[in-house]
Length: 266
Image (cartoon, rainbow, N blue to C red):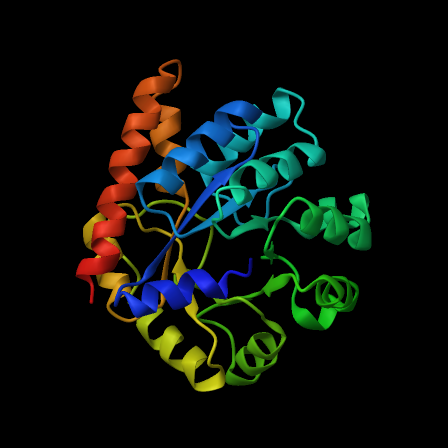
């Protein structure tokens, strides 16, 4: 199922879609599956599953700590596919967010095929732009996978046009320059970026980087189609290390708060 179905459903209900991120393999493979399923139960519309990689491009310290733990436990790329399969089985659109290097190492066409077989909806590729991704675009198009590229406040109108033309599913607008991490205030660069992106495409626009509570989600939901949250979810699990049941409860509470914000923002 493509991601656009989740955005259409949210739009029909007059709210923004909540997109939740967790890395696969953290706190371990089964633990990450349990955690993501708790997020789905509590109101996430789309799930982004991170593929742990030793040289992360955009990850701030919170996500790096989680990724490091997954790698130390012997995480393999096949584990991300196992996680996708478990989550996609719920009917929730599930995408993988990854640095480009692991996909290239795995084999671009093979990865696309295995992702589709696992029920995945597509791929978010933060460190590769459409002009450098012909192999991925071809492999994705052959399997009807969503191609989600990033636009940033620094993107020129020409870059936004080129990027959005290659996207399918939604466009990922990074509202803050720099690495990921929950912030106390959301960026004032996000609104104008969404506006510029909308001039170039009819695709839904999701805003990510820095959202950590329902009030911030409501603020972003007032102008964006999707609210993307990552570090705040990871932090909950890091804070509950050794207390899995408590961690799952806290994840559910955070998700519910964010989902309520996605509605209230409208």
